[in-house]
Length: 443
Ligand code: NDP
Image (spheres, rainbow, N blue to C red):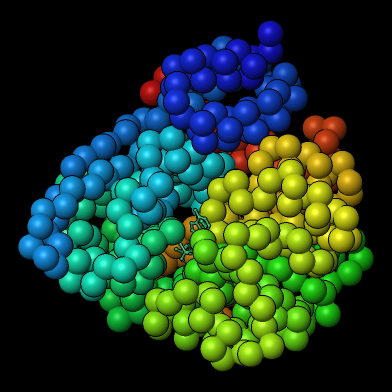
């Protein structure tokens, strides 16, 4: 049995009932085998056995009081997975589905993603099974403050720097950071995604979505084409989806569909993004409200967004939102590229199907790395007590996305998997972390 197969089997046995964590291990570990064959020193040093075991996992009670005066209790998580190349870095997700398996899958992916950016950041992820939907601002604040009452002792500018993810945007980061500052007395960059008035970086809000489109630009460039006039379908209508739609439209693409967890809108004339921003960012409403503004658009509930013919598909909602049936529809309708805005958007079988049928595919750890990359730029600005212009941050982001694309392609080709960006990104991300772990001894 190969080294990667053995560690995969051990990790699955040791972590039962963690399907999402198993899924990410199954996707990543086998692709590392050609590299490990060339570097037997990593097996001797037990690098994989160490890599799959988080350095630290925290689970804690988060009690808070709702507007009716009742005590509510949620469960908080922080998995500090790997600090070989820098302090722990990764977002917080507030969603009722959050559990240890999901936080571990996200944390494991984050190790590779952060390494791919070339910046000094280790991998972590956290969150809570808290549902921000329908909560008042006061309830959100009460929850965030209680969450930080435990978390504050485990994070810090040079230790662990959380940020946003699903259900955690600018409002939540503000409340979390405010409470952190109050408890520690430190005005430091212990969070990224902060407001511009207190240390946030220009272009951070846009970074994941814009970066995703910069990745698409590279993928299409390799096919000898670009985004101009390409019909584009984007799932989700949150932070990543909205700014992916914005940048895609700037590059001349026609975004015809977006969604939320209830359904999707289809506007064949092209989505009016200002309307989506009004509904989602200001009113915190549902995507079906789009029809109040654009009568000709259609709304579909409980249907699959990937049935809409498109050349570019950008899943930007959540894990496993693109399965085999969706992949088949995309292939049938002539889709050219799929780039993951969400983490592990596509199942392993969907990815295989896309690749076998000539659809260019970029995995989340490469395609959505723009968010954490600009987060690391926010950390650099905080440390230096400076602020870059939007153009400067955006320019650096575009270069980082180009470099991630190039290093993933090169690694795939070097290890006999030419064109397989998923395998290439895994190897390119792994190399740096494995080397750092080896050089730091058995820790
Ligand atoms: P938001 O909370 O801003 O938006 C999430 C969107 O996805 C919403 O439209 C939401 O719909 C939808 N969604 C969430 N969960 C589900 C679900 N279970 N089923 C169907 N739809 C769902 O999150 P982000 O835009 O920040 O994150 C989206 C994805 O991008 C996540 O996978 C995240 O891990 C990834 N990502 C985010 C980064 C960032 O910088 N924010 C960085 C890198 C990756 P509804 O409102 O109905 O819940």
